[in-house]
Image: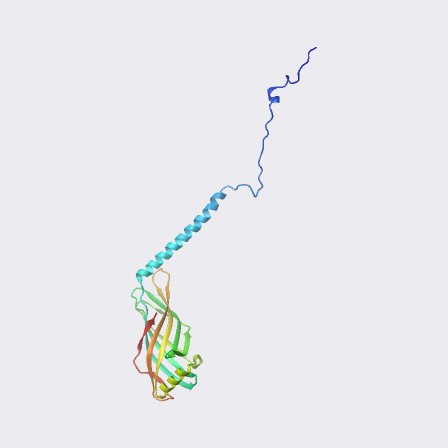
Length: 230
């Protein structure tokens, strides 16, 4: 009797273990996007380039204005009159009419003056102040006149000692005032951004003579140059 072995009838391929194939399936949100790495690296590079460009541009503008070095405007107080005076402690109320002459001393730079604030003071105590809602444009080596009218509504109170001294001087018909002028000067040339500078000018020791205690006082000198106060 012959027995046939089942194992001998199996082929070699049947005897080897079968290989299993595996596939990785990505969800749409997890799947790698083509070009995503390039975009993520481009954004910081673009930001860095813009920052560098802005820094270089600011440096060029700074150096240009450093080389140009515009000169400060020259301001002279041309006239000062004081009228309609009322003396009542602690106020020396009056109307002040002031005229300034503004000169642009630059041969290549235009000048714009605005944000003007005028203060009339006795010694260190302000007696009146006003902000002028106007601007003046001066071309190269240009000149302009700036008028300021300070009414009684802008009056300020004085300290006891200052009020006593100004009352004594007024009774003698000569009062020494000081005038302060604060401005914003804008320098302009070509395509460069405007260079702005806040400045204060002081016109000191301005003797005003009154012909009578009820009349108008006039500046005794023919005018006075105002000095830049740092």
